[in-house]
Image (tube, rainbow, N blue to C red):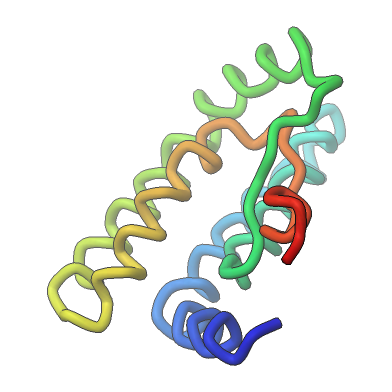
Length: 133
């Protein structure tokens, strides 16, 4: 990992990563308690790890994701996705108020679609997605 990605991830962690990762972890714990929603909890933990340290990684759609992932995402949006997306939106606002925070504000906005539809996605390094360098 390059020094730049490390520094970006460290700043991200301090300004918003830890808070959003805690929100995803809380959503996962609620899903684990409800038993039937354990797959949602697993997806939420996967995205929590991504939100905690995002630079140098991205998400890709799984080729085997189909109708069950779509239906699961609809259920997820209704019960948890909307408030996680709202968290990203609200976290981005103060970041946009400073010049240093603007890239982190945009990164937060780019995470909104993932917070709304986490099922059927895998977290990969950017090297894996773009063929390595």
